[in-house]
Image 1 (cartoon, rainbow, N blue to C red):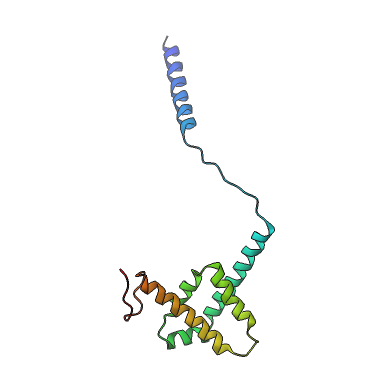
Image 2 (tube, one colour):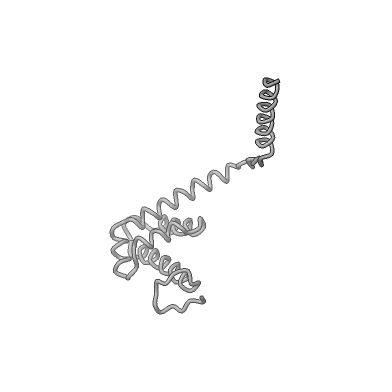
Length: 137
């Protein structure tokens, strides 16, 4: 009799655990086909982003940013948050320039883009970089 009660109790505990496990929600993985164009675009985007990051890490660019009163580290962080289209445009401008010429134009262009990003975030009230900007918040 004691053996029967002990085995029924063990079976009941086991069944309770099984019922608990089977009632837990199951998460399904959602997969889709990836086209060649998507893979190529992603790898190009990563290459363009790396090129822009290397450009922002150059010492002459960092010095020019500091000369204009912009923190180079913050500018590099903001460059990392640019969308893929913006990065593609900047990298395209870097590719269009002749080697060894018009580096000033690239530096000024990069600084202008960083300035505009900082200005827009100030106008939206997300940052407080420029004291002359009145944010909407």
